[in-house]
Image (tube, rainbow, N blue to C red):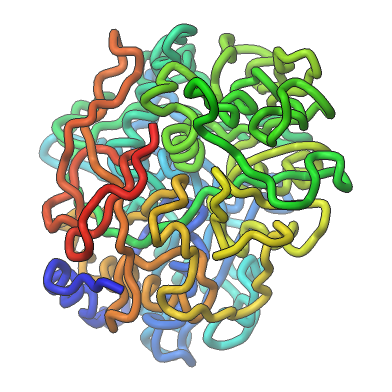
Length: 575
């Protein structure tokens, strides 16, 4: 396998800088927000590699709500005010600490799991004054959890101490609560996250679907909340504008600088609740993105045209068999946007979208989404907010709880643990290509209850060779002027170095020992403005990390190309 060496020598050198404890104080080195797909890997890397000595280190996790019904943790946008009412964003949290002694740790790392777009917004939000700017949303942990044991959201066997979560020390609680986000963990480029926000905040355009119409909020910069339609859920996602350069659109304060640090790549997996085999058969199921006359049958399932088990996407004649439910993610999701632009909204299908026909964003059945499909068989579309809801529902629903349903998510062993090995659930091939394994057999989702080491270079073989088309590169976004940059880089690198030996949830971008790395990338481009262009994306190529230049532009749905250090050529640029 081709290895990337000289391009990253300086970055890797910085990433090996040891954490320097600060005497009698807690330094929070890493305050992450964003991608749920990266949440576990970064927690394990923080504790297993950086929280030393182990005897003074600890880990703590919390998910969902407290016994009083409050979020265990949330992000507060610093631009929130009466004129700009920005809702708090709840999420799952991990905290790791180490260093020092006598029960007083000196080094802390934490991350809050929210949507990738929200994570980017949390990083780029600028407030304060021109002479005293404030950057980043604040992390807030519910006060009732101070001094309590964690919820063991990550299996004990994966931590270096093989132990359940400890008690959250008051000093660590105090250090984390109110701390500003300094890292966005994201499934998509910041430019793509900003594009997704602008698209959500633009008036609905039924012809091009360049605008999705969630612009009914309190002002032009804060949209209408996108609501979950899963049983028992109160989850919502609110589009809020942010800038990557220049001045913040709400506060008019100059935004901070940013650099992206590649983490690794993972595939989008389509999966079903087959209801005991009625939808569809549990053998190899193939989706065809481009069929006869350049049709996009898989897009027709999620755009509400044909929600049937006999859809062309499943090899049928169309609108026949059993009615099915397509479960969509919210337009602020990195998962939704990766799927949208790699699989549905392509150059030859540029006016289609899974948001097709969702015209009213203020009332049911459009928000929360519970919309009947237009085909003769029936079927419906519903909305999930977050990966957990997409797969498992809240108190019900999701693909797990909805018979004859289909959804999509970034693959992760933890994400799919409740469906793994069960005959009722299958993952599917895309154009006949398996997203997880070399050869498609039963379609059962694989399990990894504990460390399940993978040989370097062996995970996700068809993502690696460029034949599987629905995937994205995970990244961390940081401020190049942040005094904690070296510590941020160190954690990013450790997550990559460890992934093959713990739970191989993604292909590492580049490991320190050169044993593994990513040999494909997506071409970068400029997003065009929303108005007047049918929502198309410009194909003007921009810099990308594998080419050795500073990254710029978007890449969701970009052509799949080989690492310039290896054999050249475009591998997959189906339109």
